[in-house]
Each structure stands twice: as structure tokens, then as C-alpha cells.
Length: 260
Ligand SMILES: [Zn+2]
Image (cartoon, rainbow, N blue to C red; front, side, top):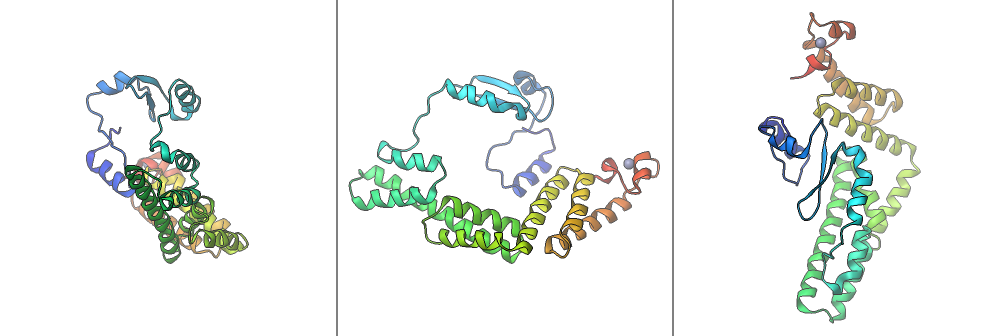
């Protein structure tokens, strides 16, 4: 749910590749119905459609557990694939892949179950390929944090599939390389700052860019952070409002005036 303009929501959905539906808030009836008192608000709705809880997402942890205690988990996969489902629940995609291949080659699966097994095999393989691509693309684009995240996912969840063992070796290799780990750390903070910029939190993003430059001298991430800070500096100076005390004190546009 969002109360932003449709165009802005669409841009956000596109950029963050959000796959779940988003509704635009209208007259306030909905907020009243679920009891929204501020933003962000989370609402927990049970499988029967009953509103179980409303509140700040940070307070949701225990509530979700409590609500789950009262509900029964329905298996998503056919009974013949129950062991595979357990592995998938634990994000052990490599082990699930092995178990599925074995079941399929055993030839004892009913036709519908074999089709489900094949679909899962395809899904796991596609997911693994996508992670391999993310590593290669990340390194090419000097997005070392993105590459690091993908290789860790492969290393922890996809062994013994082809390529996953190489990912384990690569994780170890990067861990031994302080320059690489500096790039990963700088990249993680760059991603954090970019998110803040998206939310219009320019001051906070600016502080992170400056911290990256200071902490990780001579990294590609620091060069990128310096460029980003410069961009904000120039943009913010252009937008300074001389009648605003905060702008004057900062020597550049404050959060309010550096927007838009
Ligand atoms: Zn201002």
C-alpha cells in the first residue's frame, strides 16, 4: 500500500523489481479499517482473511509466530516429494536438486509427481544459472557486493550442483583478499546509500558516501562514492534556499530543499 503518486510507485516497482501487488491508498477507508496509526504499518491477515494484527513492522516478529502456532501448514508439494520440500524449506537447493534427480531417475514416481519433480529441477537450475550470471555481471560492472552476495548464496545453498563448489572456492579466495573485501564492504554501503537516496534521505546518503571515501581509500567503491557525493554536493548547492535556516547552516540544501 502506498499513498504516493502512481507514477512514482511504478518507478519504484520497476527499479526494485517488486513482484507483489501494490495498491494505491485512496479515501482513507482502508487505513481506518485496519487501524493504521503511522507509517510504516504491517497488517497480518490469516488464511481465512481475518485481520490478526496491525502495528509497526519491527513489532511483528512474535505476532507472526503466535499466529502461525494456531495454523496448520499445508504441504505445497505432492506427498512423494515431501523430503524435497523439507530441503527446499531449509534453502538447501543443491541437496533438493540431487534428491529430485534421484527420484526421477528411479522411475517410481507417478506421472504427475514426475512432472512436478521436473518443474522443480528446472526451477533450481534456472535459479543457480541466474546466480552465476549475477557473479559474472557484478564483476564486469564492478558491483562487487552484488557478486559477493550471489556467490555466497551459491556456496551455502547449491552445493553439490555444478559450479557451486567453484563458488565455495571463490568465497574463500575473496575472504583472503583484503582489497576485495574492502570493495565488498564499500559496495554494501553504496547500496545502502542508494536506497536512502531513493527515499529522499539525501543527507544520510551523503554521510555514507563520505564515510566510504574515508574508510576505503583507493577502492573502486570509494571512487564511485566520491562521484556520488560530488553529485549530491553540486545538486544540493544548486537547490539551496537562502531563506531557510537549515540550508544556511549546512552550507547546502537541507533534506527538504534538496528534494525534487
Ligand atoms: Zn532548507
